[in-house]
Length: 397
Image 1 (spheres, rainbow, N blue to C red):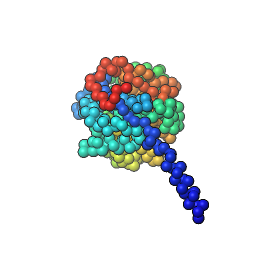
Image 2: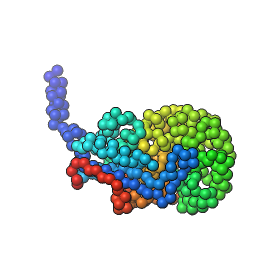
Image 3: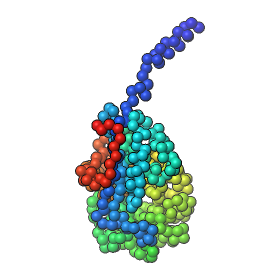
Image 4: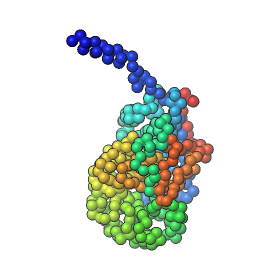
C-alpha cells in the first residue's frame, strides 16, 4: 500500500511542474478593419433586375480584417456585401473586434462563439454573422501560415486542384452574341465549365440562349444555368422540364432560397441536378437545405460567418452525400473545396483580381491550390486606394 501512495505523489509532483497550453499561448494584440469598395467596369444584371426587385450591381463592398499576434504571426480575411449593407457589416465588425484582443488566436471555435454572443441580440444569421466572417477567416489564415502550410493542406486536402467554372460572361444584361464570344474566350483560357444566367420573363428566350451556348460548347462540356430565385414552383417545374435536353450540370436557385422543400422536390423529380444555398447565412439554414435533399450545396464562407461554420456545413453535406459548389470568393473557397471528400466545383470570378497581389492558377479546367502558406493572398496597393474607412484596435505592430 505504501508503494502505491508513493507513485501517486510522484505523478502529482510531475503534473505540478508542467506548463499547460494556456501558459504558452500566443495572444492577439492588433486588429485592423478596412472597408473597401470594388467598382465594376460594367453594371451587372441578373433575373432579380429584370423582375424589378434589385438594381444593377455596380460595386461590391469588402470588409477586410488583418490580425497580428504578440509572437508576430499574421492573418487576413474578408467579408463582402453586394448592393447594400457594406457599411453595416463594417460597423458591426468594428463593435465586436475588441473582444478578440488578448485572446489566443488558436482558439478559433471559442472565438467564433464569443463573437456570436457579442451581437446575439441582433440574431445569429444575416449581417451579424457576416460581420464575424472577416475575423474567423483571418484566424484560419493565421493558423495555416504559422504551420507554413496552404490552408487546404492544413485542413487535410483530398486534391491539389478543383474543377472550375466561369459565371461572369453570361449575365442577362449581355446580348447573346457577346455571351457566345465570352463563352468561347473562357473556354480558350482553360476554364472547365460555363454557367449562364436565366430567368427571363419569357422562358423561350432562356431556352434559346441555353441552346445556342450548348451548340457552341458541344456535347459533354459542363454547362450550368442560374435563375437567381426568380421562379415559383410551377414556373420552375416548367423550366426544369424545358432544360432537361441540354445535359446541364445543374440548374441553380430555381426557387426562393429558403424553399428547401421545393428544391428537394425538384431534385427528386428531374434528372438534372438542382443547386442552391448561396444566399443562406448560417449553418442552421444550410442544415435544413441539406436534409431537404438538394443535389449541390453552394455555401459562401463570408456569408455564413467564416470558415468555422463552413466546415460544419461540409461535414454534414459529405455525410448526406451532397455535392459542393461554393459561391463566389474563390480565393477562400479553393482551399475549402480542395478539402471536400466528394469532387466539387469552384466558381471563377475575375472581378476580385485587382484586390490582391497574387493570382490563382487556372490550368486544364481546374484551379490549383497555391503553395503559399495560408490562403495565399495579400492586399494590393489598388485595394488600399479604394479604402473608404479604417479602424484599428490594440498595439500597431
